[in-house]
Image (cartoon, rainbow, N blue to C red; front, top):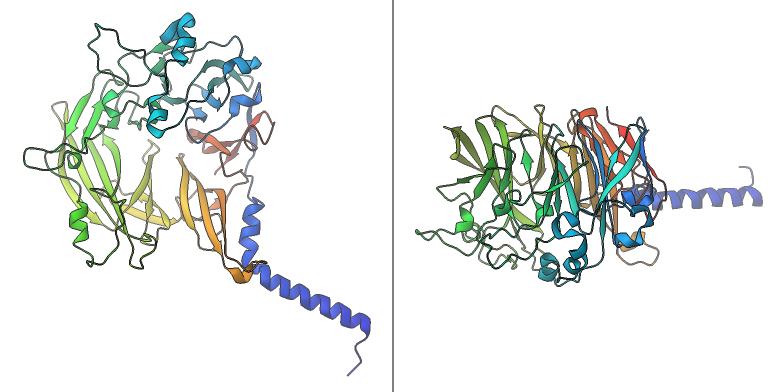
Length: 496
């Protein structure tokens, strides 16, 4: 056997050390890959550009791009007064439509926002900037508002709503109105003129206008859930919260029909407790009916379906509530003589529906949570109304198992986009300090085959997605938020 020289021995030792390092770090490769934000850039195009960076300032709600058949809108919001934004000087301030230019300052100082007071927070200056893309690809700012403003549009794009956090003026002594819904603006000419929608839009569905969960079937038919009374009881002793009320409008919100169930539709926590051993730890967060999520879908002019998804959490090890019981109730609705009514209901065990999206061309998808809390993408069988699971939604650290939370779900004609936040625990044996660590990351994925396969996108996962052009299966994004990137351009990826 030939002798090993010192040089050869050094090379052998280095190779062996490198191999050991590679083996040690192999389990961490998905973490490194995620933190590097590696992903694809399919058919990258520049959608347009902003005039100033604050136009595309994103927050966790009420900001981003809304694409309609008639226009492409951009709403940004920044924690700064409009007087501190020289670029926004001269733009119409929509709050003046409510308070007038002379009374605006007193309106801003009239007291804390009701939601802020509820949460024990103090109001901070903020400005929403509403922009519309012109023929040259520039997002032209057209108005501001010293509050949050969620832009929603009818499917045909002809009518545009701004659901805001602006308080109504205090009622006069002679006023008999009990409507305290935050101000909603509407435009019927693509933002050239705005009007205060004084009656509001489904005011019984909630006074926090920007938080309204509206479902448009078409440009005239829209739905919302009425806020329930969790303390009232019916004559037979049934909790009023167990008798859901739907609101429907056939004329764009001008008139509203209440659709009431004549029987309980939720399973009580008391009944669920009887299904487990007496020593099960339920914590104190399940309430009367667990975590309830409500969904409505109109199928055609005379048929609709609603789902009530309930999740109850418990523990058997005395630590965290890491186990769950889930069930859903599906209810059919039928329209007769111009009025909707609840009809047959069916209880479906082990079904937890997180979100539902309708692309209005025949495809409806849902995100379901299985018993391991993994997210599954499913499509609706419109004949049987059953959800058919297509595939598991990946996490940011896949293939390493992780807990996941959904940040965003968008649907196009042939594609679905998700933004997920994942958490993973690194055992001490893989850490340099020998201690256990928790790592979090966001990632954006899309599927073009309804969940059978997923592809990661090169997008900053947290607030990186601005919206979606559903008609053309293009996701809209920017290079980081305004404070981390001064790039004025807004981009899109094709998802075919």
